[in-house]
Amino acid sequence: MTPRQPAVLVLEDGRTMHGESYGAVGTTFGEAVFTTGMSGYQETLTDPSYHRQVVVMTAPHIGNTGMNPEDPESSRIWVAGYVVRDPSRIVSNWRATRSLEDDLVDQGVVGICGVDTRALTRHLRERGAMRVGLFSGADAEHTPADLLARVQSSPGMVGADLTADVTTAAPYVVPAQGERRFTVVAVDLGIKSMTPHQMARRGMEVHVVPATITADEVRELAPDGVFFSNGPGDPATADRAVRLVQELLAGGVPVFGICFGNQILGRALGLGTYKLRYGHRGVNQPVMDLASGRVAVTAHNHGFAVDAPRDGEFETPFGRATVSHVCLNDDVVEGLRCLDVPAFSVQYHPEAAAGPHDADYLFDEFAGLMETSRSGRSA
Image (cartoon, rainbow, N blue to C red; front, side):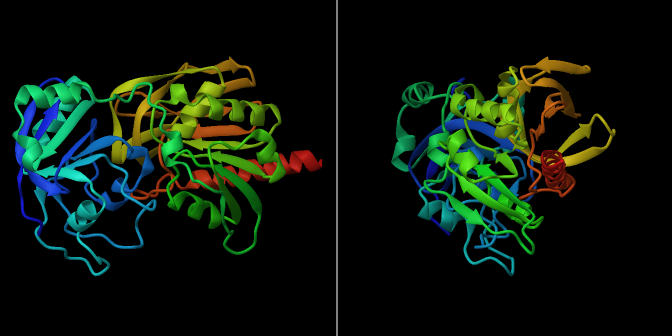
């Protein structure tokens, strides 16, 4: 176990907590957010949507299952910092090859342990997500006024354009499993590795492409549909992706978006987005499908939402659309469906990594949408 050093957590409103170092020793800044999942911390840490965020784990005991080479959702840990109450002293899982703290140290991720994460979560629920600094070792010895000033001068999440930091540098292909039924272009805004895998299981050959791709380059790949992934940052900055969706909708190309992709589709339809007070993060968020009344327990990671009319259909530049899903905790819009063009989206993560499998049927709906569109073109 890495020797512990004094550490301090400082929120931008001045709230301060003292603990011990966990992971790398030093300083980090980000947006303080909490996640309510009791498991799946490896997937959380490697989710690109957490870029520039300091993640507070509400579950008290973290690290007991270690880390393994099968579960990462990307090639690295993306969180800016990590806050836990009680780190596990041992690793006890047959799949584990390393400890969680080993990976935090090796990848330079600064964390803190021994703090009251329940009190911290309650504070963030009441005051909202905010900037935070973690300081350990010699960095923790500065005066409280100096530490607070450094936090308050760090960048916030509103207006943050982070897609370029997380998108793939070069296209790659995830082959279909079994017979290839469809060709899908997946625009990587911060995609998780399980997402193209879920599509491949359904006979989709998935071309994962950088966020800088143009509509002409998409058309050259002759896709049956285009997928827009999850990702970090403020959707108000994603003008390129919004224009791409608009060109695809105008051409009748089937579109499916999740999380950040839901916000992009909303903007493409002429809707606004806004920042939530503390966001939705975890693997236990209840969402209702308004058409069927079905409730799914879903995995979330978002701090922004779409501002859309809740009642009935509304007009867009591409015809009629409707809100398809809402969160039962706070009534936030969790899905959109276009009625005159082939497009839909949800605000959550149907790939379920980590998380429940209630929503993986949405990949089948995407397949059905592409099949219907293909039949319409051939008629």
